[in-house]
Length: 88
Image: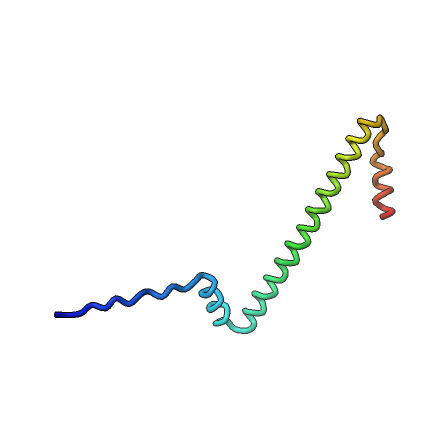
């Protein structure tokens, strides 16, 4: 009678497989991947800062609009806003 032995399959995570693939590349390829990663991170950080600035600007504009309605004050003209931006 023959005995059958079941050998469990080894599970490799996707991250480990990717890391092994990266480590097997030439140094020039690894440096290029690192540069791409760093550039993407810098772009994402800059995009996040821009989104925050835009949200704050819209919020400030909305508050000024609400204030002008309640106080009856006149909003700044586009020329006044541009001059204010140039002085920042």
